Length: 286
Length: 351
Image (cartoon, rainbow over all chains, first blue to last red):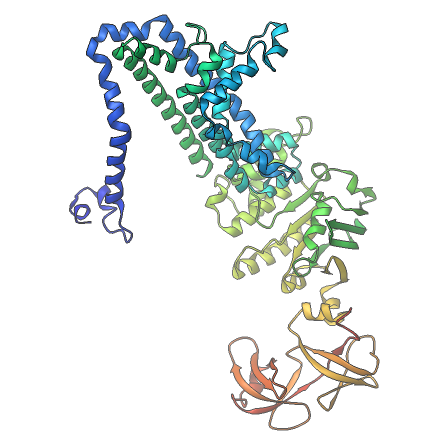
């Protein structure tokens, strides 16, 4: 408190007279915690690539194989997050709005991708979607291959990111009173108009949050993807796998360089998503 | 008649929410559905709007079967108890919603929608607040936005569910008068639900009193207040004091004194319960013909003086008398309470 009181800037003084003190210890704890668990390791990652020279870093990240892997990782994660946004919303809707036998079971199943070891999920997905698997064999005659292609990568990412969208939207939907939809109906709106103009705008910030989480999770996913992906360089090899390959070649700087690119791109994308979300929330509750 | 509701019944599982309710509304009438919670009044309103499907019965509007149409085709304005405004839209966008939702062929041009919204904003006295979001409006203002939104579609009937339920007493009285004025100006057939008898009696042309999913009595406020057909109606429309009495030859003997019975049907002789309004007593200090009681407290703030007494039987009752008659009464006095008239319903507890 004395520190706050002696601070001269008007902005800082705001916390001085609070009847519920706690800002300074909480901020101190937050900074220490973040430093230990996030900032220090990330700083180490940011410093590592430069050890073997700028040329090497550039050579690694501009090699076609790296570029392809990064494109696949971000592209498939984005596609998976889009799929999850659509179907996660429908599942959340069903779980919140309707009472039916087995609802609780479905509600519990939604969380399974959180709990299941990702490798287990990856192996099962690979077995089912392989050309001789239960689902893969249905598509094989039409010359559609799922496992060992970017499509397979996306399916694995849909699996791991699914709960995020459902769990983000559920509480908001629960909060959205049915009478708002009824009001739209009495005003002559069709069901589709009601969903597009009343329900979706109301849940949009939550949907965006779920999308971001699902996307972030998918970008970094490793365990479930490598089994179904087949890991063919330039085709179905994801960036995290490439990092592991570089590590196995003792090219630590190269591995760190790919990691750094992922870190920077993820950070930028999450910033944009967060900004978008804040912007939507602000314009909705002005 | 404009709106004819016949034999509407609705069950929620085993709970009967409405048991064969029939009533009608004339063109331009202002109708109140009054009743305690759980009496089915809101369910009936929602059935008319199409938000609930009745198990049986018919609703005709100018000869057309209303139940055959889905909600959005009924063109009935509905104002929700908690307003149900669209939070992400401004007041003006809320009001325009019904017009913008129309199919392209019948949708008015954007300029017409704008001018209609402005017109409605001034009708509900919210000029200049069209750009505000619901979160930036007070409860009373939100209520009026909800009303303007319902009026925008030029409904054939306007339904209001507890329109003043969530507002504080003063705003409520102001809005009540304003709604009455608005109804006189628009001439729209209006039905509103309330549990507040004062509101119903003050606003409505006619009041339908519901009890346990059935219509108890329907009539003008005067009819209901002055000729209640059952003890329930009498008790619901105002404070009521119940005293044991014996009916003999058309008069009630209350505590040894004969009191005239008002009301249509003279009850049968025998023990019964007398119902009396708290302002229907003569209070005299000292002994006399009537109920003897001891004064516990005299409350002089308010339009009437309220005298809290304890009867000799131990029951506490509160009677109301004019202020000039209360001057000579003080706490701990012994007084005699003489009812001027009573109402008696035979086996009122069963009916």
